[in-house]
Structures are given as structure tokens and as C-alpha cells.
Length: 313
Image 1 (cartoon, rainbow, N blue to C red):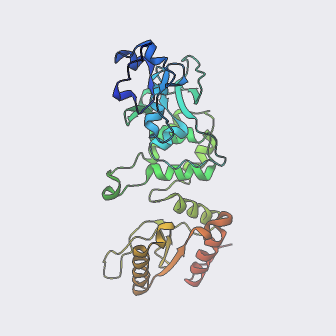
Image 2 (image 1 turned 135 degrees about the vertical axis):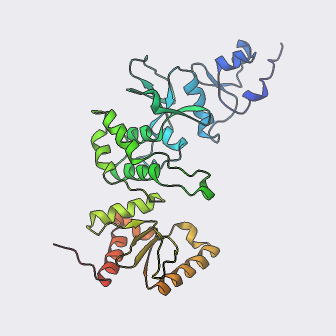
């Protein structure tokens, strides 16, 4: 009995569609080889897929159907948008299809059939994906209000080119508003309208956004985000994560990397600069974010009161 010819090398380390395999000269007999796993009608894989990049895993599920794009949580992951759900679910690929297209029922895929305009789809890593602003609007269906604001802040933040290789935000607040105006009556639209009022340009991390939202709920004044300290001589200094220039207070959120030796040295130097400038530094860590960040809010409120702020009743 003859052994089936090996697959072309391009198909050995990724899932693929039977259509693209046939175009490359793979025979139907080869596609029936027991070493190939079926991931659904028209999709095969000869290797484990769990460790592959998301764009590689989802690509055949989009290509096997016309007029589809990655959407919702799948698009958010591809675009590197924060997407934490209140309840984690096993991995499923979210795919959007325009209204009127035939219904799809496939394993591993959640298909959303809804209004979709041509300018709401872009190409990312070689596959069609909903644009950042459309992805944000779709996330309103599945995320909490705070998580949706976090995703919105990430969309509109100005990146640091030296670290991220891009200089422009993924989209603007105006782009997000355009999605809301265009899709009246869409599921999640009320939450999106509430969230856009809370989105700000300048937040560099989800924790900074969550801290700002907790401060707002506690009726603290709204802080500035990542604005440099300018001293009395007009010299520009470092940028606190959140700050109150009027009260000379800088708030720094310290992630886990702040426990590294080099970062500890930099943090000490930063604290010394605060003192030299006559500013108060408020350092917030993960433990202060428990219980809706109430410990963080209490710490910031104390600093504000000491600096002369009073809550108007």
C-alpha cells in the first residue's frame, strides 16, 4: 500500500483550507490522511494550533467563507485592545458577516450577522478585521461599562513611537462617536453612549483608566493624564500617570515590573524629583486597586485635602 505524499511544507505548521491546499496540488486522498485533524468543513490542520498566533489560527475560518471578518473579542485581541470579560469562556473565534449573508454554523466560531459597512473592515496581519472603532462598538455587547471605557482609552491614546513603532492613535473619539451615530439601535448602544462620555486621551494602561473611573465615582476632581510637570523656570520634567497641577500632586500607578532592581532605582530618583519640585507623589499599586480601588481613592483624597482641596457639598 502506497503512503500518501507528504504535504507541502507551507501546510505543515498551520491550519489551512482544503481549497487553498487543492490549489497547491494537494490531492483529496492526502486531505483524508488520518494525521490531519478536521477543524470543521473545509479546514484541516496537521499540527497542534493552541500555541500559534491568533491571526494564523483564525485565518482559515475567515477564508473558508465569503464576506467575513474577525470581530468582537477576536478583533480586539488582534488589534491588542484590552478585552477582559467578567466571565472567561473557552476560546471561540468571533466572525462578523453582513446582514443578508447566509447563516453559518461552524465549530469554533461565533458568527455575528449584522449591519457592516465596507469602511468598517481593514486588513490586519493579512486577514480582514473590523476597524478599531467598529471593534470598540461591538465590544459594547460583551464587556462591562468600565472594561469598555478601558478599551476606548486604548483606542484613542497617543502611542510612544520609540516603544510601539507607531505615532498615531488607533482611532479618535470622533471615530467612536461616528460608529454610535451610524448604528442606532444596535445591541449595546446605550452602554457605548455612556462609555464615550468617560473616555479620555492620555491613559497609558487599563489600571490607569480603572483608577480614574474609581476617582470619578468618588467625586474627586478629574486628573490630567500623562502631562509633564513644568517647573517655575519653565523646564519640563517627567509625566505623572495622573496629576493635579493646581495641588502639585502626581499619582503613579506601579505595575509588577516596579519590583525589578533597575526600576526601583528609577522610582527612588523619581520620588526625589517630586520632593525637589515641591510636589507630592502618591504611589498606587495593585493592592490599592482592590474593592473598586477604594484604598487608592482614600490615599488620593488624603493628599488632596492636605493640599487644600475640599469637596463642595
